[in-house]
Image (cartoon, rainbow, N blue to C red; front, side, top):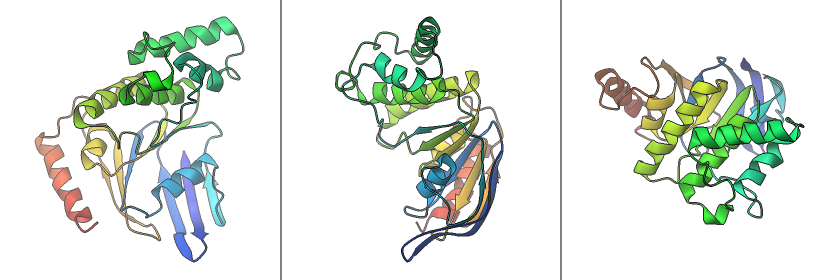
Amino acid sequence: MITLKSVNLKFGDFVVLDSFSETYSDNIINCIIGPSGCGKTSLLNLVSGILGEDSGEVTKPDKVSYVFQEDSLVPQKTARKNLELVLKTVYTDKAELKNVIDRFFTISGLENAADLYPHQMSGGMRQRLALIRAFAYPSDVLLMDEPFKALDITLKDSIITSFLDLYKEHKRTVLFVTHDIDEALLTGDQIYIYSNKPMKQIKTYKIPGEKGKRKIYDEYITKLKNEIHKLTETW
């Protein structure tokens, strides 16, 4: 379980978190929505350990993987070598390492892209590779910072399907920052709505229905969407 207790964080005169407390449940997808600049990325960076809190307490599992807005691939390495770079310290047996990587390529539909370099891959392929890199690493927590932001609608739907397929096979606690309400409603188990900085929780929603089978036009999804729009329409 991820718990933040009375956490304070500021950058110079800007107070990002002021006695911020929150608990995120294990093995579900926790979606985080808030206005630009409110501190969502800072929250992920605290959980990852990239940032340290000024005071308060952050409790989390040790193993964390991260999917950023950019794919953050090493351009000089092939798709396979990008995965090996992250996984070789976990799977020291070369045969096991190859089997793990091959399995994730198959799950994601990238089995024919293993020997391609990032510049030879489409944006969607690179983002799939970033996803399987994060899932292949045996972390307890997966952090996602608007990873689908730059994708067009058709490609985004395909990548979200890949993400949910990977999650179904390799469940873990997910913190998923997004500005897209539809993304949150279709992928999340729970949605947290936050205010501008210093960031405070406005409301939390539990999303009914099975992920991957929900439709944005389902009556209960439409109702939740309208409620969230009312809370966020001034952003």
